[in-house]
Length: 439
Ligand SMILES: Cc1cc2nc3c(=O)[nH]c(=O)nc-3n(C[C@H](O)[C@H](O)[C@H](O)COP(=O)(O)OP(=O)(O)OC[C@H]3O[C@@H](n4cnc5c(N)ncnc54)[C@H](O)[C@@H]3O)c2cc1C
Image (cartoon, rainbow, N blue to C red):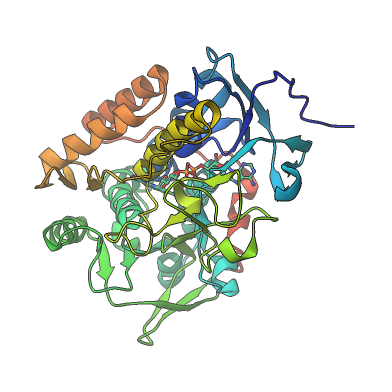
């Protein structure tokens, strides 16, 4: 029988589900604590999601933004890792249900992140492409390059346009960064790789439901990013909501239609709570309601941090903290301190979580970004430099930093992208292609 086979060390066991930003920081901060840490993740690596869009647009290779979890904790003797899918929890017995068997815990921390939210629209979900995992990013890359290869086989210009119309939904940082990267593909790569295809046949749209892109940033940053995107030829449609999409035609709420076979969905994320969490603490968006100590409402020793947790105790964030890496990292750090207090001094002096907003930024492409931090609003080259430094420093592992930096240098000076390769033939299956390729 398969079982987790975790040795009993006599120390309180902290089980962390998820080796993302929150889970990793929590485990690191518990390095010298008198606890046994068991981390479970369905993948054996930590994924740096902020650079996923560069994998999907052939800018970076997969292993430069993923880092093996075992490598991160190789010098931490109280740390155990098992690759497993967690399926449920039985809080009354302190038992976690996983694909590799059941596991006892003293403290359970859910750090399972979030998934793409299609807001219940099953038809859009079936045809659109999300970007939350490494596999999805590679599938997007395969798919995009395949669209170009197939376009060469078409005689009808309208059919080619439909193939090369790339539509991004959601004008937040992910949608903006994707649209910028696609625009650079069109500007620098397509004319060299596909000289037979006129650049005018490739169009990039960014669709945003509110009245401006990057609406979580200032109007100044919104306007600057809009200007940069439009300069790159991206068609930005604000106050536009996707109503329907059948894999070929996209219909907006104002009745406008667009022919496209590539709808990239960056319009929202939601939580997927593990079965067994008290129903009353699960919110409509799938996130788990926690108190100021990240304790799941209605439980004694279950905690949630990062994207999956919704904490509404700070009046400045009545709908919870933003689903960004810093919140997850800081909550992991604060919970580590509290776990030590619970273990050593029966929970005396627990510290409520306080979010320290370090700022936000988004890049639009070569020499263009917007950044807001420490009361400053930067745009253009300076913001782009800041964006690169912050992302580089946040990446785990010296090797990954070096690989990403050398890739960026190479791209900057050669205007080239290294990974324009289709690895999996069946990649197009992520969007059901019903188009007949004419010979
Ligand atoms: C494309 C993209 C770009 C982004 N850009 C930025 C950015 O520029 N700046 C920023 O601050 N934030 C950005 N974010 C958001 C940021 O990545 C998240 O807020 C952050 O990853 C949340 O950390 P977390 O620890 O809560 O979860 P995650 O980092 O998502 O980690 C969750 C982990 O849990 C594992 N897991 C989930 N369910 C299970 C299960 N049932 N069993 C086992 N394992 C499970 C997953 O495999 C994963 O390793 C971006 C997100 C995306 C998708």
